[in-house]
Length: 286
Ligand code: GUN
Image 1 (cartoon, rainbow, N blue to C red):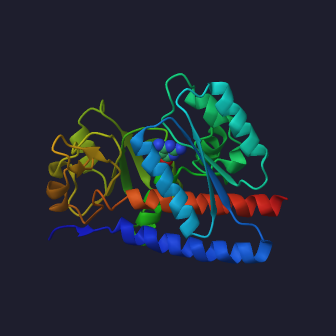
Image 2 (tube, helix red, strand yellow):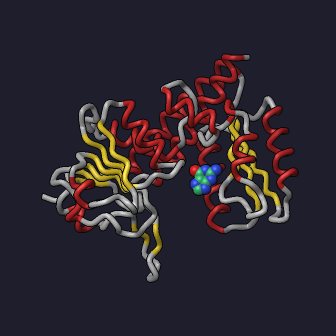
């Protein structure tokens, strides 16, 4: 029997509806509307679409969205000054600087300039460190969305072997830590892992986040495993595919996320979650 499909679009919509309701209650109680400031530097068309979608999702959830568009010639200092102003602005609860930035700007410097309490991307080293040692902070949206999917699907993580393929700071490493915090036994592997297919085949849960089209084959999947595909790759013919060879893997897995419509819709949902959390924490601290 082929794997059942995990409907990330439906799970994301349910999360967004719940956040909208909680946002309404929060605003009614405090008079504060959570506000996300999104900064876009340059004219990358994909980034432009992402930022616009994030802004639209905020408004749909009853939040305020502020978008700051800067030209590609913006200097690092100008961007750092803007971040400092947004840090100091009490009406802004979440700050997101869309990546990638133009080459002449040091991304780490910009991320480190964002106040950790407003870092709704969860990219600041303070938040990454808090995740590592199990302290409350902001967790990056895609890993958080993956965990939400696994919880929604009632996947047992305790004692399970979770194999994460990919070791990025944005997905691979944080999702591995989250899975570990849920008592999974976690293996992080990557393109240089010896006997990679065998390692992946030992996973009850496989998270593929390598950024290589259809790299994880069906023969690598343990029968009945839960497969979460984080990849979004465009083939020369224009087709969007994940990091997993979907048809092959679907024939073997127990559950699988499609691309598109799997992890993608969860990322924006979790950004809204983090923005509401930021507003709640700032309101209760002040
Ligand atoms: N570029 C691609 N994904 C992301 C993301 O999640 N956050 C930011 N800030 N930039 C990105």
